[in-house]
Length: 259
Length: 267
View (cartoon, rainbow over the protein chains, first blue to last red):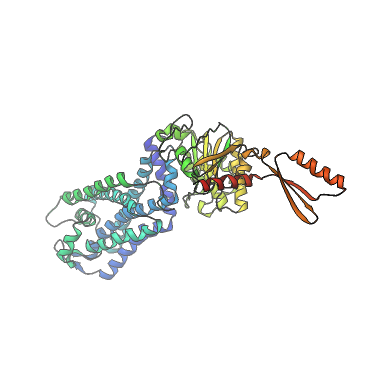
């Protein structure tokens, strides 16, 4: 098989394993849906003081899509790669003729496809249950922003595996990094409730920038028609992604770290 | 590792036997191309594993000492996934039968017993139709039945004409499976040969046991026939019997323990 056909081959089996794994289906697919339903139920009917005032549901749909993209990429990859590494599966795959990049490309492809599915699922729920418009005319900008963000967070997830010593440590380390940043970046708590100092702090990390870029693509800004790609935020996300890629190339390991 | 000098012939099952921590896995990982060596010369299928290319990997199969399979794929899917990595794989259905998992092809690997998982491990190493297989402690921690099943799968490899490099710390495993054995201890090869003549067992001193007036007598001898002739001759002259007469030679296990204990003292 050629390199690309081999990526497709690897991707097919990664997809099977992903959808059969109850933990990945719950945390990557169900959890964001449940979060959206909870936030919409608890805070629905209120307004958020951004863009001159929008409905909370209009705010939470792109916010939870942001979370689901990071969950499908950084979180899911970091955990599944550490598990595969400690099980000896990464080492074993290195003993076959398959080039190492093919294995990684299959996993990254799996994550990006799941992230796109989550975009469709959450956008549909937002439209059907809460009347949040799907901005069809901005779809290219939305997908482009999502794919750049998904690729960057894949690189960060792969890099993060180097800091995770064991299977048991994977979930605590990933959650300890992501959960506080979701709160501080305005994903869980709307911008207008957050002190500016908090947002400044969150600006030092990629989640806030990806959220802003995705929000700009998803929610039409008043009087600023057309400009739907937030280039500056997306550039910062991409730089984080490149940093993750370089760290991965340097520190990623295929052999188990534990006994 | 000090002096490991080995030659494995095509088509044979070669067992690399030694206690835990003797350097078996280090050696096999050098041969598999996972680990860089600090010195010496290594050629596997005519190539240096450190500079192994994809073509070389097509020709070898590896079963790691410990490797858990993806629990969410079935037996058949696991084999199909690996078959896709190779240019000329063996038919998956054939491999399923070869490793005796015919009835389990659609079972998720997470539901297999330890022995069945190990046989699938062997199948995944075999699906690329390699010339040479590495098996690193294939039955460590297994119950007797699972060991027996794994042994059957490995014995089947010989019939396929594969060359097998096996590491183990079980005497009986080497005896059961291998054409030739090398014993490693303290980073050195301390003995080599077929399981039958290993450690020059034939020429080791034999021990003659008997009882004389209720007292245990043990005679160690390198000239067994002569010693027996003398002892039995004297007994016949006295008109007595040699009660409980028995001759023992060191077992393979004795040779192994002696050789490896010696190396540990030398450490």
